[in-house]
Length: 162
Image (cartoon, rainbow, N blue to C red; front, side):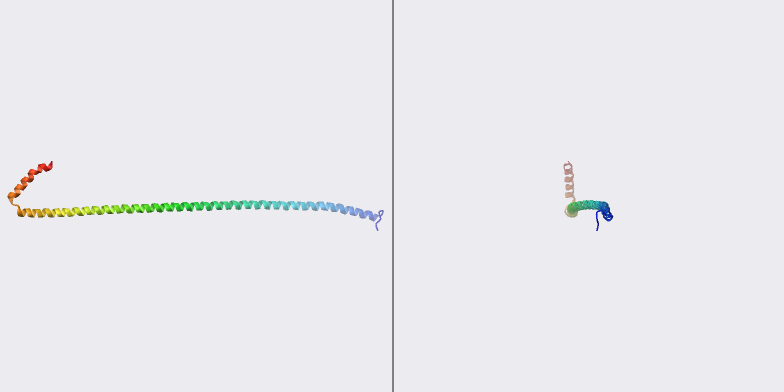
């Protein structure tokens, strides 16, 4: 087989040394490529992690904005309900005041019409009484008694004027 002095031995040794050197060089190159690929994958993973964190922050921000918008909407609804209630109360109060005012106006108008009717009735009654008195006086009073009445009325006139 191989003897230490033979050329085949030294060729085999040289071949082994060459293979070991190439193998070491190949391991270094392959290790560098693998390290480079691992670094690239690590960078992509870091980027993916950063993007995931950004997405979580954006999601949290949108959820907060949604809660704020919902809270604001509830506030607006509550305010609108309160305002509608105030308008309803005011409208009811104004309606009540209007009805009371119109009732008073109608009562005043009725009272005025009653007073007017009463005045007309009195006027008619007075006219009838005067007419009846004239007829009675004309039928029962003679010229002598009528002259005495006129004289008494003229005498009483200065006292009634003062």
